Image (cartoon, rainbow, N blue to C red; front, side, top):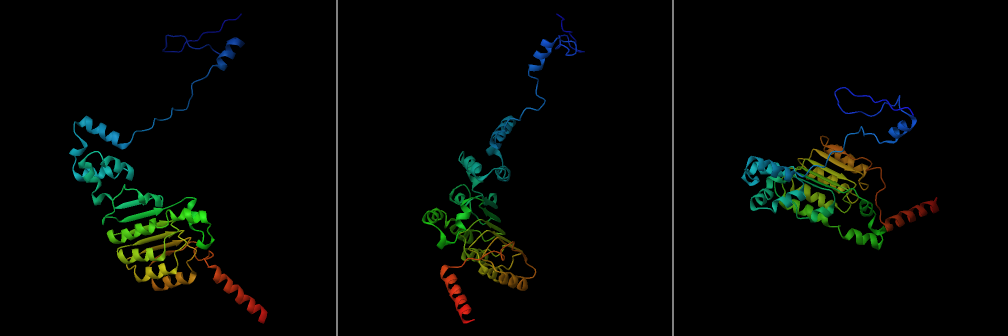
Length: 289
């Protein structure tokens, strides 16, 4: 039996694996079956949260997090989300004071109306930017006409029907310096809610309404009359916005940047009695003709 040829690698004293060109078929088969080292890099280990790194950093410096001044604490808090801020504020009185500082809450972003119930944020006059964006399957249920909803769908909507409206009422009373408001997928927001914001928040410069089915041309009229500082108005995918209302805004406020993607081209809501009345009118016209 022919023995395999042993080859040494330069710079190493141990014996390397046999050379495949001079190996026997059995040795070559064993080396072929033997698992090779993966060339892909190992996945990175998940990093810890920011509070752990803060604790480690201040431990090395021989100081505590509470030794920082208020501005530094606010800067560190700005890197955390609402839940992390709330958890960190429960550790001591000093961090609680930083959590309650109104300057920390100039921007609020909510991914669903249900987050408005959580007590993990502060609503203050320092609020400048407010976003309530809901991208979920329940948005389709909210956008169904009320008289076409089933009992189950009405019960589903009743759990969050007034959340956004009540929150906007609080914003009108507490946050007069609001500059930007975005409502996306809020199917229960009415013309009265948006008009009230325009009336109380005189510094509002940007109003973005997307997929809000109950918003009508009354919001466009309120934007012209009440929105003196308004510079941008978006009413995308709002099916009850008409082309006549958009044209009136463009004529009255030509300097206002207006966007209405597919709003005027969608089928607006109409109550069953209105449909029946229009059908009878059409039947009379056809009978007379």
